[in-house]
Length: 101
Image 1 (cartoon, rainbow, N blue to C red):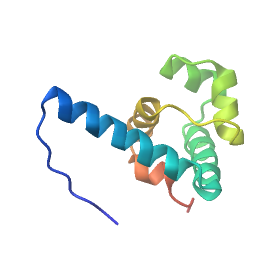
Image 2: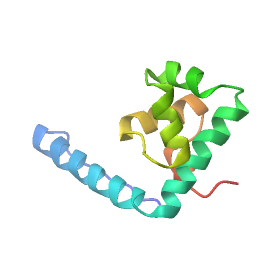
Image 3: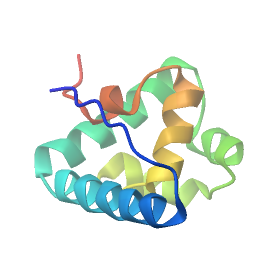
């Protein structure tokens, strides 16, 4: 379901929107299927590019241990890193969170 959101960009509004995004993201991530989907998709897209975990980590300025945790589903990247991953892979964040194809 796509939702269009038009907001005012005052400081107060930005903080409220950030809080809402944080809440919605982590509420959705705690759903085990979404967490598993994310883990599978991160690994799938990395392998499709022929990269090692260390090479992907270097591109994102993270450790290969962090990438390993993401791919095992033991941890999830911060939302800003999730956006970086999506941009790097040339997909949307929704694609990374969706059931793998």
